[in-house]
Image (cartoon, rainbow, N blue to C red):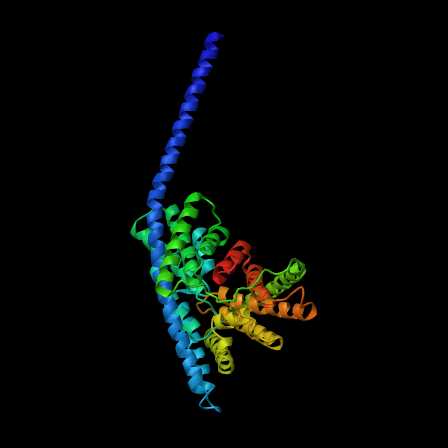
Length: 415
């Protein structure tokens, strides 16, 4: 029995030694993987930041051209509206033709396509995606469609991650990590929001909280943000006044805002799906005619109010500053709602996050102003609700609450 007991102790000692060696080897493998992954993720972040900065410059030039055209066209009161109508319709048609002919996966934001790639359901041709998304996105958003730049930068960032992984011939798992890191870097570069880029990867894109994924996404997003700030300026996306903290008594009003945002988010998602199905059912030349009609509608809206079209950045800043009267908010809300679902449903290349933020800000300001008129002591600053409305409406539609909260904090530079 003594021999049996000694044999058991020896066996336990061997097993323990084997486990220790296995853990040491696993730790060495993880360290080696990080040494390989992190420089590659930094390279992805650099590429995504440069692509996003160039895209931002092109869109700024397009916006200036469109606004200049609208201002010039007002010299002709009777027929001047034709020029912005033709400009927006042409941009919409060219964007949709490019997408459908050369890269159908670049339709809309492109984020669902990246998610399918990461789940090994779709393939990714980075050359085609990068080129088509850049040009088609510039045509659609520059033409005034109610779309944002973050969708193109997310998909282009993912394409850059794929390109670098193929150049360096990394294993499939690392390739997917670099694609996800590029997507997060694209969001970070679009909104100057690196933490949001990381959380977006973990919460929505890959849904993988492994340390290597977190590290790669964090490094790529940080590098992309640094690059865009160096090239475009180290300022928050939205400039808002420094509002004081709302009183605790106003929390029920914020809860009401959340409920309304949720209900209107359901209405938006159902309307968006219905619009996409409508465009899918209409075939051939009639489909392009429908796309042209969307562009024409945008152009007419721009003729009356240039602030109402495009990504909605100017409208959102005006709303966040509280510079819209209550009677004007429903008009802008309905116009932006219709233009956003029709612009996205048309299949043109462009994101949906920025338009959602503008609509959410309008909703929040309306609730804040109504509550201020009823109980000014409880809601002394209605514009605070515009900031919260952005996060609430974003969350209601995208279903990514952590991303929504952090995104608004970073975009406004005020927690």
